[in-house]
Image (tube, rainbow, N blue to C red; front, top):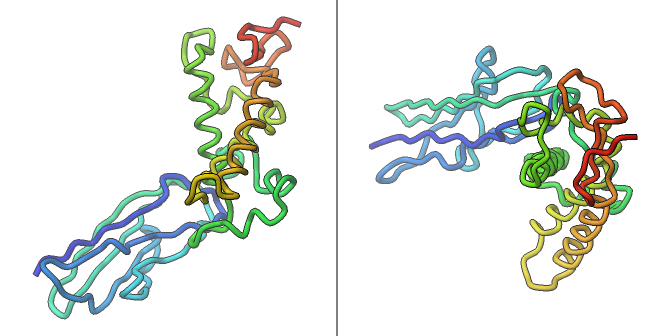
Length: 230
C-alpha cells in the first residue's frame, strides 16, 4: 500500500481573503481509504482534521509572508505528509489595479459566481494585472534600463482601473461559459471589447526610472505608442 499526499494551493493570496488548501487529489495505490486526513495551514499551526472524502480546508491568513502548508494522510498503519508554500501578501503589496467593487459597478450580482473555496475575485484581478504588464512588455514598453515594467511602476492605478476591471470581467464570464454564444460568452465578448477600448484610451504615467514617482514626462499612451511629454 502506497500513500500519496498531494496538495494544491494558490500561489498568492491576500491577507484576509479566503483560500482553499486542497488535498483532494491525495490517494492510495493500488486502492484503499484513508482513516484520517489532516491539514496544517502554517508551520506554526496545528494539524486540523478534515473530511476524509473531500480532503480540503478553507482558510484565511491573518498575516503576510510565505506560509508552509502540510497535508497529512493516514491509514491504520501508515502516515504520509506533503508540504508546499503559499505567498500571503497585504493589499498594498498586491497593488491590484481593480477590485470586486469595480466589478459590481457593472455586474451587481457578480459575486454569486465566486467559486467554492474563495470569497472574492482577487485571483482574477491578479491575473488581469499580470496580463496588463505582459501586454506592455510585448508592445515594447520598458523602463530606462530596458527592463519590463513591474506593478510598482503603475503609480496611479486609476489610470488602469477600467482596463483591469473589464479584463477581469471578460475572463470571469469566459470561465463561466460552457457553450458557444451562451449569455456568459456574450458578456465575455462585450467586456473584452470594452477592455480594448479603455486600453486604447489609457494615458499611463509610469515610473520609468524606479524612483517611486511618475513625473508628467514619464508616460505612455498605448493607443499611439510613444512617451508622452507634457
